[in-house]
Length: 486
Image: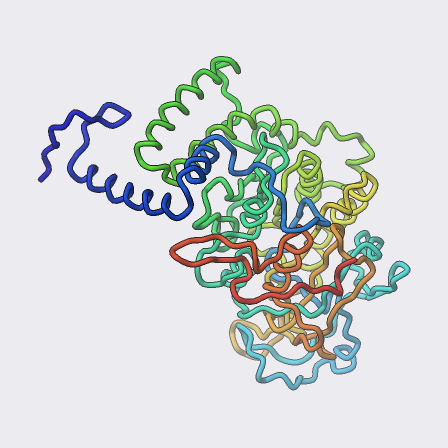
C-alpha cells in the first residue's frame, strides 16, 4: 500500500504521486467539479485567480457608508472601578459601613459593607458629565465622549470576560474584534498589518487568544508589538536584514514565494500556507514603513509634552501614528498583569494606574481632533468588567477589610469617542449603589454591533462560513445602541 504508483504524471515539485495523494486529489477534484456546476466554471476560475493575486487585506467596501474608518481599543486590563471613575454614587457615602441588599449578586470573593469612593467627583464641560479626580486631563474632554454606565458581562472571571469582550465568546476561541474588522474592511496600507496589538510587557491572561484570527486566515490575526523598548528597531524583532540589501532581499523573497506558490498549488491552496506566504510578503514590505511608524522621536516637542511621559502614554502616541498610516484596528493594552485589578488599597492602586494613562488618553482625543482625524477614528476605552461597591474581605476570612473591591460583572462603565459617537452623552445607569446595571443595559454583543455599525457593517450580515455554519462576531445576539450615535 505504501509503494509509489508508477505513473508518468508528477506533482509540480517533481515528486511522484503516492496512492494516498491520488485519492486525496481526486476527492477534492470531484468537490471542485460539483462546485463548478453550481456557480459556473467561469466564476470559479475567476475567483481562484483573484485569490492567487489579490491581497486578502485589500480595502473592501462596507455594507453602507461608514462613520469610522479606524478603531483604537484602549484596554484597561483588570477591571476599572465604575464607582471611582465615571459613575458617582453618593448613596455609598451615606451607607458607608452598612451591609447592602445584594446577597443574590455573587462575585468571585466574599465582600462586606458599602465602601465609599475615596475620590471626588466634579462636573465637566458643557455636558456637565461627572468624572472623578482620577482623570483630571481626560475630564476636560467629556464633551467629546459618550459614557456608558450600564455595561454588564456574564462572569466575574478575568480570562472568560477578556475573551467575551475580545471575541464575543467566553468559552471557545473565536476570531477577535480586530480580525473581524480587517476581514470586513481590509486595510488602507499594504505595507503595514491591518490589526496591531500594543503590549508593554508579557502576554495578558488568555494570551494571544485575545487577538487571534481563529478559523479566519492567519493574515487577519493581530500583530503583537511589545512597547517596553523605545528604539523602533527593538519593537519588532528581526525587521531588518543586516546582511542583505533591498535588491538581494527582493530576489530572495521572490524565489521563496515562487517555491511556496508551487507548494500551495500542489496542496489546493491550503489556508495556513497561503497565510504564511502573505506574511512573508508583508514582513518584507514592513521594513521601511514600520520603522517609521514606531519612531516617535520624529514628533515635535509640543506633541511629546501633550502626551506626557511613560510607556502607556507612548503607546497612545504610537496608536495615533498607526492610524495616520492606515492601520485599521489598534488595541492598546494598559499593562498585562491586571494593573486595574485593585483587590486592596484601591485609593493608592487606582490612582497610580490612572496617572499612567490619564494625560495620554486626553492627548489622543485632542491630537486626533486637531488633525481632523477624530471623526473617522473610533476610540473605545474599557476593561473586562467593573468592581463591587462593597469592600472585599481579606483572604484569611477574619472579617478584616482591605479597602479594595472585588470583580463585578453585574454593572460597570466604559467610554467611547470619535467615529460617529455622540459626545457629551451619558447612557444607561446602575442602581443607587453602582452594583447592577438597571437602565438601558448594554452587553458586549451590543458594543460589538455598535462598533461594526459605525464601520459600515450590519452585524447580522457580516458572516464567515466555517464548518458548515455562518459565524458572526455577535453570534445570535447584539443590537446597535442608536442613542450613542450622532
